[in-house]
Image (cartoon, rainbow, N blue to C red; front, top):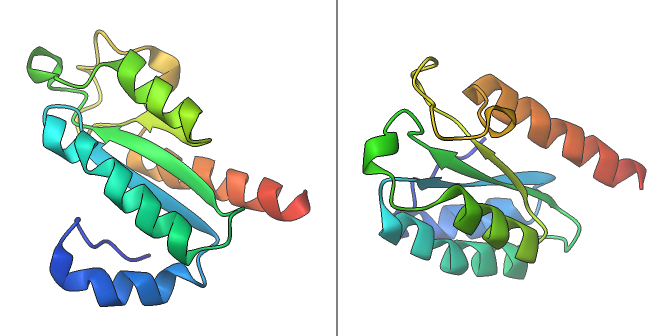
Length: 125
């Protein structure tokens, strides 16, 4: 697992490790539109450096901050669908996800489990 936090200084590390990736998480902050806008760049870089069949999940974070949400569920789901990505949302706070469909909200551990299931399915296909 490599977490680059979107930092440019890790570009050489990320592109090197993309080649061997079986799955990837693209993570954005639902309260920060720029983090969502940057997804195009990260997805393009990921696709350029990985197998075209790598399983990719788009994860919106901080769903406990609904009052500060600037990236709607519909917008994020549409982006995921248009790009063939799994979509889910998560928060470090479990009981304050009002406004987000419950089937989209999951704990961080389940984010990895869902991605792992997609990786296994992709390899079986």
